[in-house]
Length: 114
Image (tube, rainbow, N blue to C red; front, side):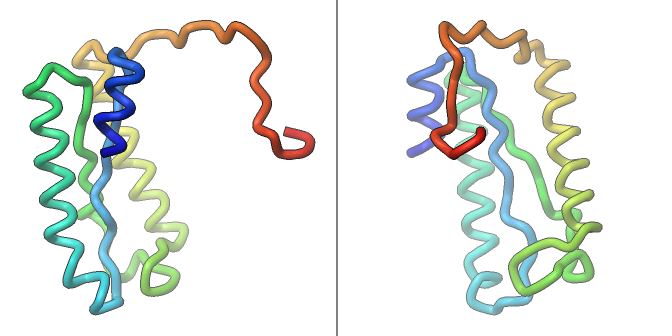
């Protein structure tokens, strides 16, 4: 699982794991609740194990916040940003955030010009 790999590789990392947003796709929507429940439980279990993992709830978005069946419009993205901001603030209040370690060398993305 990705969260376990991240916290194993970087034990002092803070991970914010978000729920899926609402969808107008019946196929996606029928699985969303189970997925979101699993992500919430994974975050809770990780916290109980002493890891810095928090669940970010995206349930504030509605179908009015969608540009298509799966993707948010500008209003939806703003709500997502606000939810992540609350998650970052909570992580800061919990003492989970610190300045990043300096990179030992210049990091390149591999994409031309980046």
